[in-house]
Figure 1 (cartoon, rainbow, N blue to C red):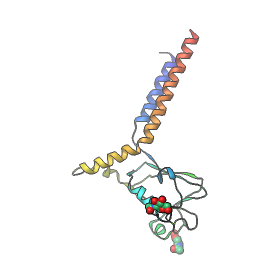
Figure 2: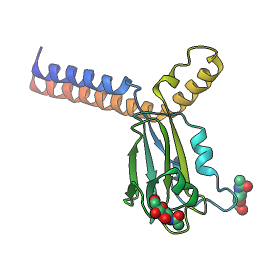
Figure 3: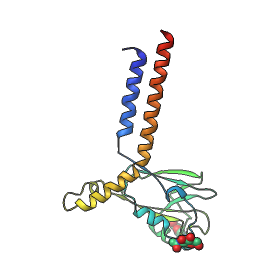
Figure 4: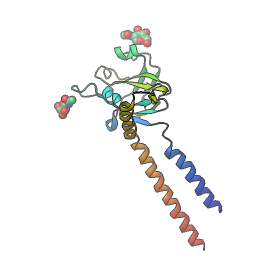
Length: 181
Ligand SMILES: *[C@@H]1O[C@H](CO)[C@@H](O)[C@H](O)[C@H]1NC(C)=O
Ligand SMILES: *[C@@H]1O[C@H](CO)[C@@H](O)[C@H](O)[C@H]1NC(C)=O
């Protein structure tokens, strides 16, 4: 086996591992619209969005925003929109937060008045044992699977990109191969 072939083989193996692992997902908070002050007639958009998703330990949430910020606070602070002592703060415009344990995470905008207008969200992360309902969960798990498939679209896009780059590297290999001979 030539070194080039070996490199291609290793590349393919590593890429496949990455491509087919379904261990974690990244969710963009609020979908394509991102993290912003909701319209006055639609203040529940973030918690509606959260309730449509099934968050698991190890997943990440991405907040995309302009001239705003994101803070993690306690339940009490969330209820009162109290942003004076956040345990996490970011205002980079593109914040990725790792959901590293089960339970509820409370996020608010740190910009004065935005939380009160509905720019806040509760993300409930399931305990690992909730992943595999042992009895009577057929209907529930079928619904959950479709949600997981739905959120796997990002992953599929990544895989498609990967296959394209693999095809490109093969093509490159043949070009080199034939021009040498
Ligand atoms: C909120 O108002 C906008 C325009 O005024 C409208 O297009 C939208 O459908 C409304 N949303 C809800 C949830 O009522
Ligand atoms: C906000 O929360 C902090 C502790 O996190 C507390 O000391 C402060 O009194 C609270 N402010 C209000 C207005 O509730």
